[in-house]
Image 1 (tube, one colour):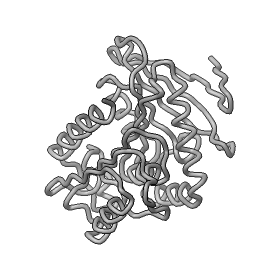
Image 2: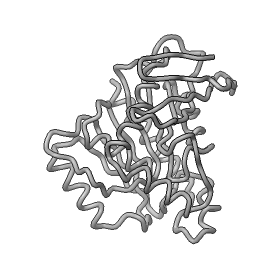
Image 3: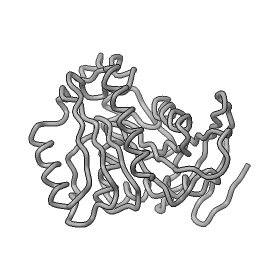
Image 4: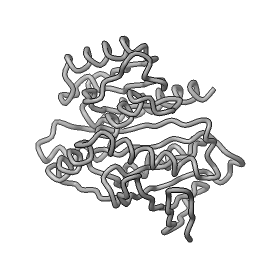
Length: 261
């Protein structure tokens, strides 16, 4: 099935049903013509438009974990789209490839923003989405992406970063952050230094942003992903922590309810 929208070509490849959660894979393009893949999920038991949430993947790319989170959000009653920041939906399980994909995606801030915005427009175009109520969540690399979108004033009600990088090449300026911000950070995350945290908080405060910084004791980088322990075999200091995963997800739910009211 083909769907045409101004500036977007959408191809629905497949439709699957998980209980009452409907999913479909979509292709679209960023402003510079980069082909991108999206994974859309919604609960068909809910009638009418509902708030929309973009999901931005880890540095591994648009994999099953990012898609699972879109389904989780659909189960909470949201219209959810896991977007593609690398192009053509590519993903990997090897950190060297992931690093290369991530560096290429962040080499140009405007291109990265364009890819995010293309995904946001795709989400808004879905009939189940209330385009007046939009948010974004991201994991690791995706956490940095959603924070950068908030820094750059993308019109979102809120953003949530799960074990994301706090450093940026596009710092917020006074008044630039329109979205409310929630950071879910593991206290044992060696990828983020105390200095990074201090700089981030100072940046948010100087920008006049509304932000919340939650710490989870003993949680390492990647604490929300059950596959993190397997990836640790590559020598990465990452790991899953069930308690932090569940607490941060509950914190996100409360945050989204607040920003959408």
